[in-house]
Length: 297
Image 1 (cartoon, rainbow, N blue to C red):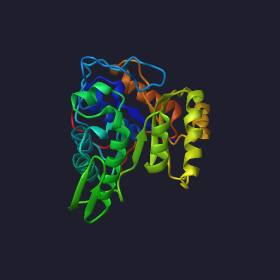
Image 2 (image 1 turned 120 degrees about the vertical axis):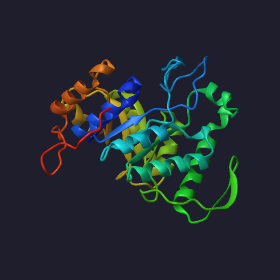
Image 3 (image 1 turned 90 degrees about the horizontal axis):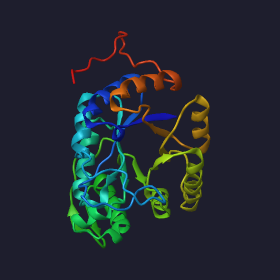
């Protein structure tokens, strides 16, 4: 089991210190949420059955690729993920370039979590059709994969069309960084099983995770894909090693955790969680037995 850290559960002032500490403690990844804009009036929710938006409009938001590139320069080993990037709101040329840049600067540590987006007003503000978001996401993913893998790319679709473009250099990870497709809907699960390298879900209980994971396994078989190597990533509570074993039995490959109540308690919470529950609970050290030096935050 890999353990990621939910940066979105923190005040932004703690992002850097928590990331640095997470790397020292042996956490595998950190995950940054993003939006292009948040509107004053918001409806819908990414959580099934809920209609109230989970974030207030004044929530601080940062450019995901710029921030992850900065974290890449401050770290050496920890993987850097988006949870999730609203790929349909951008032209795929812009997305592909951002992904490629972070992946190269980090030495191949990017995990690219994407979603079709739940905030309709964000689409209205950007003058895009919310009702076509799924098809737009599918095309954007196809275009990005071509740019990352082909010497000369050409595409003609419903939303994007171009001839003979060259995209260099290619990503550090070949053919591209892992694409983890988020969303809890039937369409999102199909998209993940059909064209993703994994699925990234919201916070779940054992009971609520069972349905989508079983559906993913069935869809992978339907599309002739092997479960081996397909990532299943979600947030979930862990209070014992038995809980970790239960998540593994369900097929979860990475848990994104936030073992704190307040941002100022995050580092101590990470230390306690690592000591109590992670198999790699000792701090990572250099060959001389000393931890890697960190610049002052």
